[in-house]
Length: 156
Image 1 (cartoon, rainbow, N blue to C red):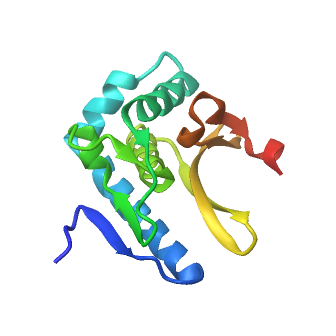
Image 2 (tube, rainbow, N blue to C red):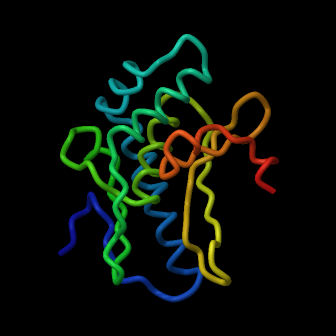
Image 3 (cartoon, rainbow, N blue to C red):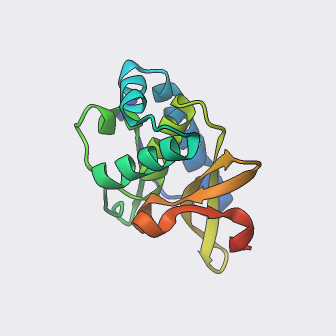
């Protein structure tokens, strides 16, 4: 039996596998957003302004999760609680995005998970977006500093 805290399954073909991954990401992000650890982390990261709070959350994820790809035959999504309690420090784009969305939701921000194709007909990357100042801003922790708050419109 697989642990409930971490989704691990064989990668399937097509969109079904992608939707399954995003479902797990939202499930874990929203569940763990309501934990005392998430609330305590966000309290420490609260800035003087809303955008400073978003930046502090983004920086915390970048500093506390080292990027590492999943094994080729598996897709794994680690629940944010494992990063918040210090039991995990590596993850790929979906793990980092799930943690970022969790903390943004805890802080009261509207967020989104975006999936993109880097190769023809193959989804290969996810990142977070946050609604701020009447626009969506991209937050891609895998890009470190350069992944912070680029307006969505600039990426079209």
